[in-house]
Length: 309
Image (cartoon, rainbow, N blue to C red; front, side):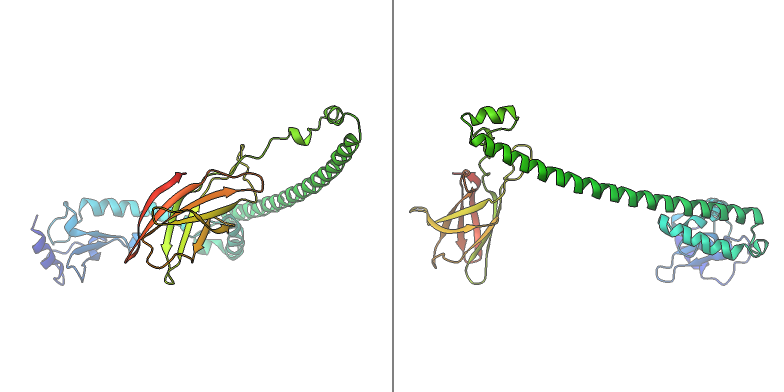
């Protein structure tokens, strides 16, 4: 085998002295940019190339086929038999229209395109069967959607009427000498027996950003899920701030969401500490404190991340 450099030189010759008319070798060329000999396999398409300098089995420039090229040429015919799958649409809704169009075009003279009447008839029958299956699926889907809507409507009406009935029972029990006895007989819990809503969570994972106008934007997280995964509603966040390391916490704002913006920080303040507590109309969570230090480049240090006070 010749060195790679001699192979490159031979690849630029117009024709070797002993030309081999092998189909694969007739397409031996060189990469114009890298001067790397390549062998193009027509059956595999223009994008499938074999780099000659990467093929250890390549013989010298008399264009004899290498083992790799022989394997590719032999497999090209087998690959060509399956490339039709890439022509058919992959989405099921697009397959039927494609087959309808092509069966209509093929049924006139199938022999002229390499098919026969039996193949075209089979495709026609399968196309019709697929159409009927699609219509049945659509009918079933429409029926399921209608059934779901009926279920929602009737269950909603049932819940409304049941709620009215419970209200009547409670009103009747309230006028009796022993309301709890009436409610127990109706298997309805009294309001005092209802499970109290838990306190909201503790804020954590604070993030601060110093804005161009000198104000400080803050975001944080807070897990306000009750037992069973149900989220508490109506949670707000009370924010207090202490300037410096000593002093009292002063009220800043009540944030309706897990973020706030502080525009009242005195100029020249070296650090501030925020105390944030989540609360509902009846309960308060555990407060969390976060200290932020300032420098010439904005926020430069944060302390006590997510720590409950």
